[in-house]
Image 1 (spheres, rainbow, N blue to C red):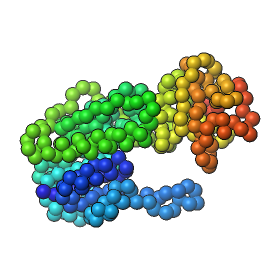
Image 2: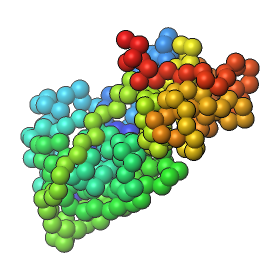
Image 3: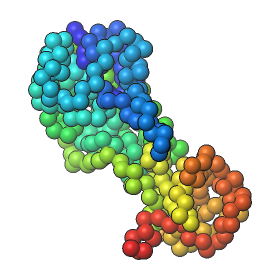
Image 4: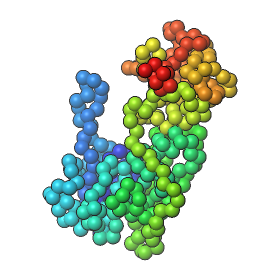
Length: 317
């Protein structure tokens, strides 16, 4: 009654730990290739995915195939005669041949309430979109992009102090518990697949350049944007050519032109399309995170200065 687990980032670690802790037989763990870490000249030391590190700690067999279509890989998965394939944020689409291998089903742990936010970045995009609620869906996988039949769903509120990191951590724990319930229910016949209902929305992968602030949005929208982009790729703007990340922000009443500094003493406020955005925690390029007050010390920032963002960048082209 073995399982082959597919996963890569920290989100997937909770599901792997839950399977191991519950006594499931994990025949193999499939994860992505080691990624290069560091910046610039230091970007040369490969870093193992979190799932690989966890699997090795448990003494599990780890596979890092370049392609999921290779005969050697497919035949090895078949050789385990797995009851389930379990997939949690693996990062690649499984082929139909691989999906057909398990005796019961290929099961995916997806961090949204399907059919909302199909795709690679459901957690960040739930926050950016201003959703008040999200959740985890376990799904019987098919060849589509998160289009398979739903098995179980558990919802959770998105709190105002959540960012993508904190919400991911909470959803990972919810997903791990839901996965165990799903496998138990499928074995007992009490969990039945049901088609997805309602209009689908999508959560494409985040791109680094998407972090550029658009001061033409409202303060509320930018508040959500900053939280959804933290920790990666980070919401950022430019000040005199220097890239500045905003790690934490709050909304304030008042008005100023989009991107215009409305206050630069004690608190750093910038104008938006509606309301002001308080830049609470900031990270200048190549430096550690700091408070707005620390950032303002020694810098000649004054009211009416302009922070460059997406709207200004486009208008300057």
